[in-house]
Length: 442
Image (cartoon, rainbow, N blue to C red; front, side, top):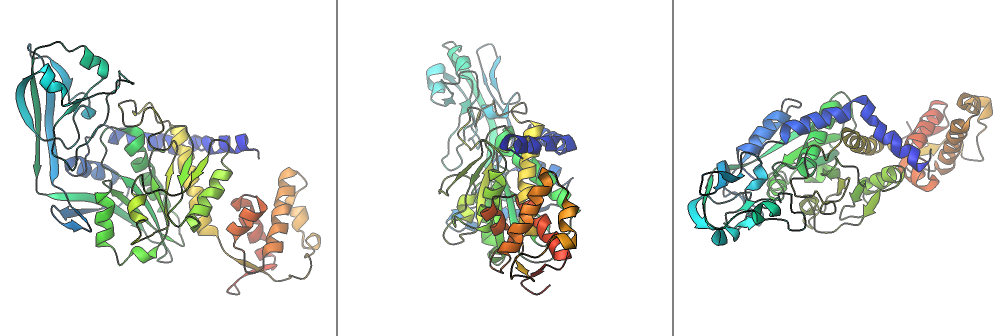
């Protein structure tokens, strides 16, 4: 299968309907005004809980989270800028990006010159609303299209942000799919952004439906799904679960998985962890456009999981990398920007990585001296004579040659250049015919 054909095969997963399901769930989440704390997070988790048995955790304001502290809850009810006639020039009810997220409350009248000090725009993208926050420095403000700001006339304006900060709790959600072992695969998405479809809703929706579908599968590993506000949420989970951290052997932070770019994978701090190798293998076979980058301490919550005190094998998976697409952190990151076929392909990539984690094992040849006679066992004839059969035969030959107890199936796929799925099928067939055993003798 050539690169383009394999890429199309991934995109065609949308025919199964999973892409439409993910997009539909993202559409439900999109209108909610989320922040690092508050009822927007709880409302979002309540929707996710319709699909999976989500456990909600509340961490009281002021709780130490290593060097951080659980912040106050933020509630916003309304916000606007109105001109002298009372007409709303900026209206939070029309788009929740219009307010500086986590803004302090205000009600005042002021001149345009005074107001401009608290307005954020994108002059280079003059028709878009930017997304801005002020989590850790008290401030108030509005975000609006630059062209709308240019159209405002001199005069006095009424400014109102009906919001409050109060002691309460930081909220995050967690779901565990138990496997046959305690070896854990962590999958995490941030839940703190408001109406941003790719950079928030896509990851939340994809992981929720992946968790739902994984319930039907008996797995070797356990799978822990975390839906938490960025930075402080992952720190809250880590601070409350240090006794479970050692069980995490694989991990992915998932965001920006609904656009047509990339895909992109950022390695864990370890650099060559099993998840790094598995994702590299999957993306190598995805086709053109895939990018793999080394770890850097800037990004999403992989920074916390990969901090030196934990150094967990957690990478970051995206389609277009954050900050590289013009829609990023603007009102253009809407439901039209994410597409079912891209969401489905992202789902397929993660599921293929899970298949590698689940299916990897280290075979030992039971007949290592010379090449076993495959023909008399009916193995060649079972494969047929077409190109696919020839590739399957090559997979068997690679497995037999590397079945020395030192090469796992993933290592064989890496060395041979063949897909893990082909190597795994060949190994299963050879095991069935008594030509392979596991390192434990099975």
